[in-house]
Image (cartoon, rainbow, N blue to C red; front, side, top):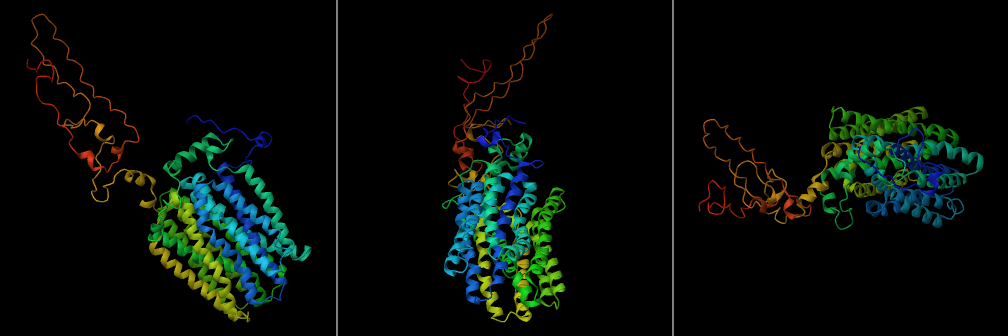
Length: 556
């Protein structure tokens, strides 16, 4: 392995090394990203548990509060992707969760003031909108390609673990410490997490002061061109038009919308549904309602490991893995949503919900990792666009649910809600199955962009690149004429004279060595493999025998 000079230790590192025992540094990054999402979605789910204690709010007011965080969340998705591409994504992710946790402390004192509460939730959405793009920006440097599904799904499983933990925790806190206690709990825990994040997580492996050299070499070598110092994507050089004309991108957008619809439906209304349809008390609702999300928390990283194993062994290529996991997860969840819609008992409904949500965990190894497959260079920006489209589902879902139930939250009305959700998932299966891809797209390949950089005539005069790589200055050693060469041509072999009697014939001179290839600076515009001027014959080789040739064939 090459020599490596690690960065200097920070003052705190002299007392506490920035590492978790028995965990690699890349696994530590994924684990703490997972904990950040647990806190973020725990804060969202606690709102659904707390509002069950207040029955004196209209559907319009409840829908406005439920959707407020998604309006702010939607606004910062695309800007979050650009910021995550331009600035350290680890700092952006940590600051977003820490700020949202601080704002959560103010939810309790202003809970009954609906206008201020909506403002606070919009502000939380604004800062949380950068988390998904920032997480993709982190994984761009920390996740080797063949561990991409495993590490990314471990991080994103925190979204579902957050719902799983929040339901029983919030239910117990409400029962024992009062209805406002979940807001204080998640605010304090989030601030503690932020301090640990600043201590343990770094932007890139090379910036980590105590990373093992073998792990650093493995990550850097496996990523290859993905982390080279190309120009960072920004508002001007990002291919926005391509995002909205590429069908693999549309496949991700549609899948994100479909998945977000069902996920936010459960985050906001699962507790309400079981209370109104089956009259379940809050404590039982909290513990049993966490079961589907517990299974999903296990299946999401397990599905990532399985997806990577299928790719490593060559059983399926990346495109086939993404389609299989995404469409299979969506299909099973949609089917069991229909079963839940027509269930007559609480046990049947909870069993159908548990199985359906558990299978949907496999879909995270499909569309949610697909950004890093097709465009790792623009993964954070593309995730921002994708998640912004998915957030639209969170914005309109509360209004659609309240419109369908329409003050009559009976089991029959809720049946229509889940039938609609199943149909949305089936539509997502068809679209993603036809148009998804797991291959790196040409418009996202930095090497292709570099090749086209100097060639102004590439679009009008495409020329196939020759075998050589050094333009006009490289010799062709095949014996053909090499016009434009700056090296002296090799002399022909010296003729042998007949040996005199008793004399040993002279040894043949050693064969001429090919001239060394001159060094060509990397900024030479003729380096491009597509440059048409490389084929031009600049100057013919000299043929006269007066000043050229060897001493044996010159004329005097």
